[in-house]
Length: 119
Length: 108
Image 1 (cartoon, rainbow over the protein chains, first blue to last red):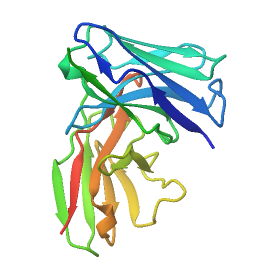
Image 2: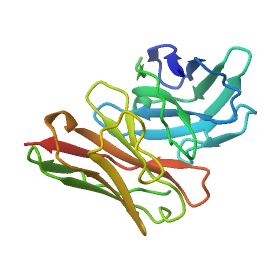
Image 3: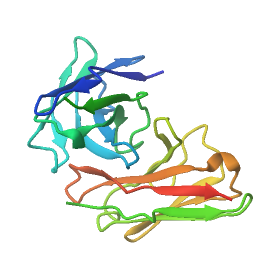
Image 4: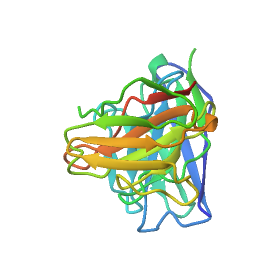
């Protein structure tokens, strides 16, 4: 059974870069069935799709975040990663990774990791 | 940028039926998905491809689509259904996915 787990620093300073990794277990990140996505949720607010990546490196990003976001994949480690540059307090959120495809939407989610932007 | 519009909140008595709508111009073009999120938990997919229910999701959850609006229906609401519900779909290009603002379902 496919499982996803986010990892990374829980505290990032303003203007620095947020970096998170999602480790996939129970299946291969090179599967043609899935894209691999990142989603975030600020405290008390709704879900925001950040972007997604296919195993071959093809990416799609939320237009509102595109200038600051990079998503990459490491098939050798069965992981994909998120980098968000020039963070501010507005980037404080729970960050989730999830599978993504046209048939099932986002049907497998990680548990989420809280990232706080503060000096 | 593309938006999906949901009512902020709905309320219903146990055993009744509630419908949550989601509107967006590109909904006739792309499937919609619905997620349930309880406090402190990751979202759970309850409807995919507009109206299909994943295994393990109770039959009281159903979805439908008509033009630029999709609807999540919960029939015979139970106390455990109290949660936030989010619709999701893609913009016209299909390259950017979007969530609706979420609807808080309160069971009276």
